[in-house]
Amino acid sequence: MKSLSLLSTKSLSRCVSASASMTQQLLAGPAARPRPFRVASADRSVKKGIMADGLRDLLDKVRDALHMPCVSALVLDEDGTVVDTEEFFQTLEDNTVFMALDKGEKWTPAQSGHTRLQLSDRPKRRKDVARITFDLYKSNPRDFIGCLNVKATLYGMYSISYDLRCHGAKKMLK
Image (cartoon, rainbow, N blue to C red; front, side, top):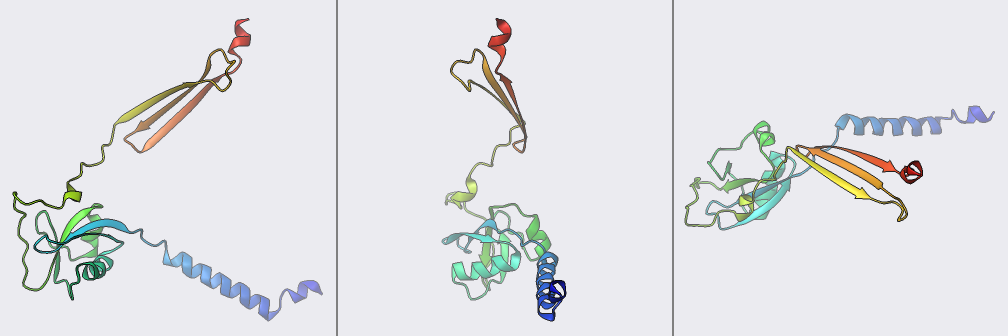
């Protein structure tokens, strides 16, 4: 009798609705992670850092940050290339510097005498080909040799480590 009560319409509807909400979450896919960008006004007097996950999101946040009623064009600050498609936007690197143009404004190259966006002039992250670290340590002060940890990092991305422990070395020497 107890097992029949589990099949009531109330319990079945809960299972179906929970299953439907999970399916909707899985089909929607993971949300795009926001990426950092820098935006300047046409005269480069106002500079803002903005996190956005897409072109539409960036345009909305630029309007708010620069107090512009509408952005007629979003261009790359370095060469004036118009960014008008989501596909092109997704190919750009993090910390790309944009210029927001209002109606009637045009992109002009930065004058060499004036300071450009200083945050964009930071050196790029260095990526080493390989970095190897040797760590010699003793887990017990009475150990004769101790332990050796070797860690190798390739291209700043892949790492492998090996821990060589020599706990019984003193006993073997006797």
